[in-house]
Amino acid sequence: MSVGACAVLLLAGALTGPVWADADAARCRRARGDIVVDGAAAEAAWSAADPIDGFAAWWIGGEPGGTSARLLCDDEALYFHATMVDVDVVSSSTIDDDRLWLGDVFELFFEPAGDGGYYEFQVNPANARLDLYLPRRTADAYDRWKSARDFGWRTATRRSEAGWEVEGRIPWSDFTPTGGAPVAGATWRFALCRYDYAGEAAPLLSCQARLTRPDFHRRSEWGRLRFAE
Image (cartoon, rainbow, N blue to C red; front, side):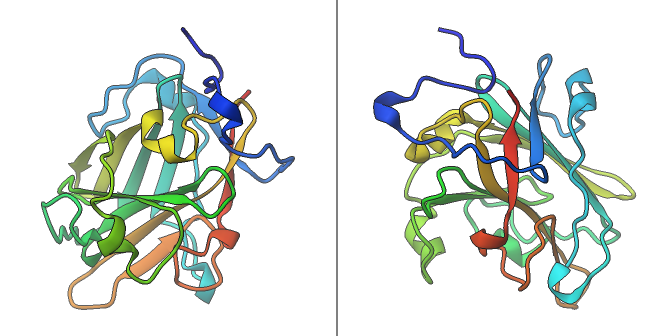
């Protein structure tokens, strides 16, 4: 049974995101055509995606720049692509579910239902991935939930002289704990973030959400992502 506008039938009234009137929400448009996850984002569908810029260390008034992302969706999945300027690309690990934030990494956070349960996805330049569903935030979240469930998302990374880029496909089944795919017009809380290492210096953290502290898990300060009608 085909479902349109990024929607699926909701069983037993499961929540897949409240519908908020938010003029400042980023838009996730429908992909018009197939997307091949190869890191290049060369398909025509990507030309319709709204750019998500303004990545910065907002908690210290950092200047935006260096990272740009895009999101799309269809009946099957959520797609993402990010381009990062980086003169010193550092991959801390090639092992999935490792502590990838100890090297360069791109991170995606989503809270679909507004009930505290949220997802964290990470991918580094070596295309190693970390994925978690966190029913709640705890001090031992990584150790407790890093292997709690299987995810089916796919990613690809590419390097260039200017830095690196990543493209990914997250099937709606990865969001099953919070009801799966969003209904048309639903709005999720989200944050797109980055660790950027250079030599022995402390990493530069940046995020599109205007966080008041260098803590990517501050859900109350995340942005809003609205799924197209």
